Length: 487
Image 1 (cartoon, rainbow, N blue to C red):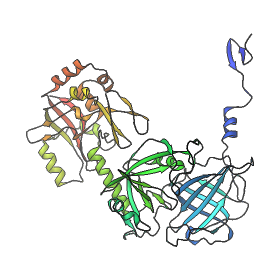
Image 2 (cartoon, helix red, strand yellow):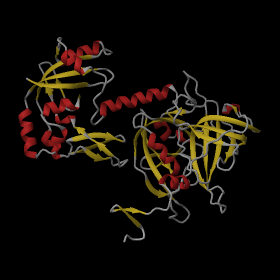
Image 3 (cartoon, one colour):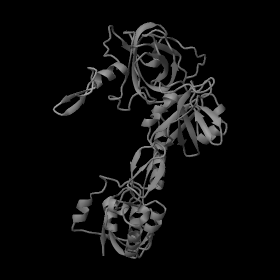
């Protein structure tokens, strides 16, 4: 006879359930916000035109500040906590207290949100500067059907509410300074602003609560550990501009915002940030800080392009550019042009916007196969802005702890020369198939090769004459090797 917890059916034991599906249990433990239908007409108003008075209004803006307060209520239907948001559009900022009981609002910095509320009042802040949220509202969508909040993740095309407050095209944004000037005393300036790009994102870890007044709060997964503080999540984001670099420290519920930021691409405009002068300059978020994610301004475009140029110049293993070169057409063409390195240099300087494809005849003067294998650097890539090397095709990022696929290290091939010039190690972008054609084996076979076989391979290829089908584009910034043929 089967035990009390199982039922035998056709010799297959099936666990007895409690009558509820997994979806039903999740819907009870983690309910979603109900579908809301407004009972009256809500007027859509720009934040800068709002008035502190009763009236049903709807505003659209982006979250530029968020912190959490936990309120333990004895009532089963009472609020368990409050998310304090600052939402801004292109005209002003609004302070929103979002109360919750069971709903986990996945609100992040930079999210586009729509808010329906029946009342507005004057905020406590006495500051009259442009960045201050002069009005506030308090909403509890789970208990009050006259208010609601919608995070527009699916319909957000990135165009709305991106302009910083006070910005005018062609004019310098008031209070904007370089990161170096901010660290060297500019942090004392009222309404100081700094524009930075994300360099790398460190892993999340537990630590003590931040000092009072800074962004901290509690997340639902934290526990009480110290005298008067709690444990909260902390994430260090390395940031930079063209003058210096620093660390941006995120606490509590703000840490999840960094998960969508892209290294060397996401630009942050920090207004009124906090500052700590440790061994390394550290920027923090306070209750007065505004964080504009990818703001629509000329300086942000320039800084992103600057970061991309650094990436092209310094990337450990720059991916091969797909859909830039028509490799099949060039390989099958009857007209095959043989270039020298001097020809390519001259042509690229004379017509930098033109795309070039042709052939190079070069000799391998140096190989680093054995050396890189001994240093555990046969394969490599970058993640979170940091290089990752291994002798396997997979490795774990030490920052985000995610598994990362690695490609053959282009520095396996050292100096290549022809009659007119030379190319140093790591100066080419190799198509994966081209590297496998050169080595005569796939990346998986290379990762399992013995040291003796790798030494033989290096000696076999040294001083070999090659024909390379290459491509050049200013967009790529390096010579790209598309195919390899031995003479």
